[in-house]
Image (cartoon, rainbow, N blue to C red; front, side, top):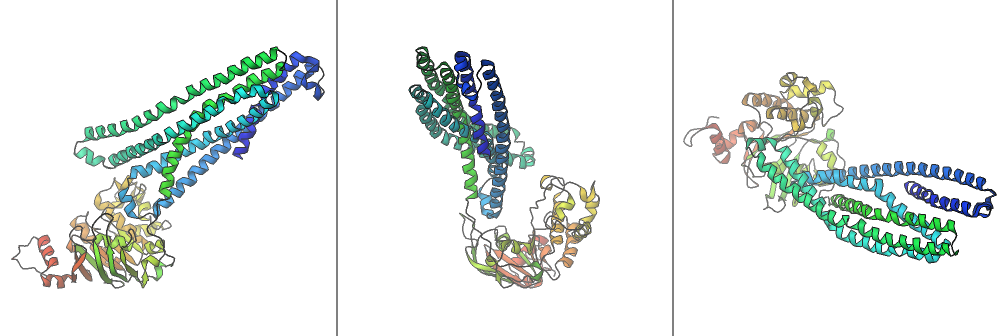
Length: 573
């Protein structure tokens, strides 16, 4: 519909020069003018008919200009909306390794400004191209019918203009790709700096960061200047080609009209219509400029959508209500991209309802076990089994709905406390939210907040302390009420008194639920049914707290260090 309205609008837009030619013909030919064929025998009647036709033409032109304006803008909005959703949906399906290698700023630029570039082209550029093609076909056809010898001169500049346009397009394409690349880098630096403002202020590096931003912004500006120098030269060159055609028709057509070979009205029509034919070609440079910008941006969006998904969802459906929580790692091998293997033939069996503590030095592979269970990264070889099902065969959403995770680095969304607790259960009642907060030992501090559960936590929860964020995250996991609970340093940011309170609540929460507790604080896993000690991706010790202390191995050494005991002091169980 947008295409049709653009073409019809241009047809009516090209009629006024014809009406002008008819008006000249009426004044010159009078009773023998062309309009006599329609029954208008007198000059006043002919002028009256022209006035009515002019009113209808202008009205129709205005109507279809309104229609194509609305339709193209709606199409642009629909296209950018659908493309943004498709790109974001694909982005959510990519593995975590992709996000660790890419920058948030670049992705935000693609989802925001790059898609908006396509929207801007569809709002204006597509219509201009259509109307330009319509103009060339209609005007060219009319000029050939009226006087082919004059029409030749009008068409002579067109090949020059087209070849020049293609040449400019070829030169502009790489420049606009560079511009989009620099825009992504600039957005990435801004995103990093805004997220790390506390660090910048703490180290008093504002001047350094401003200088780094100046360099990135200047590089972006320089890329734009390089493109502007090329695109700005296009229209002046096109104007000279148009001037040649206009002067040719003005002189040659005028000579033919003077000799009586060409009617005065036809000559008037040719002079006016030549401008309508050639002048829109001056906008071709701007249109191609918009086109190249939008194509450079669109290519980045399509490249994102074409990024292969390494972790495909299985087809087997699984209901959290029917999951017992038996987990088994069998001969699992895993390595982060471009890094040495972390896990090699790793084996671990966790019974349903069992609480397992996982301890070890940083980088020993503790958190990787959780990430592999959630299928955030692909396994190199081996398999992980949940209740007799390979997790690769399970529907990805079903698998993750069976597991609640509380990470050390808690992420809260900008919203109220209640909204963050109910994030995994949007239909949860207020009573359930309060119960979960109480179980996480968070109720007292939430009620002390200015608006209680309706208090906004700020972006990433920055209005709350680390311990408060962690307790809200714990409440969020509790409310989800799933068969597998994972606590990855969940008490790392709380004080000893709060940790003791959370430990008491965990005794109730972990009952009849498989729980994996990753901790540096050994007091957190002291009462676990089973504790495994990891080093360099391997299990070096395994047993209960008391059993491991009696072994006088790695766990015993860690306990001695955290308890502040000398090597010659006995450990009190």
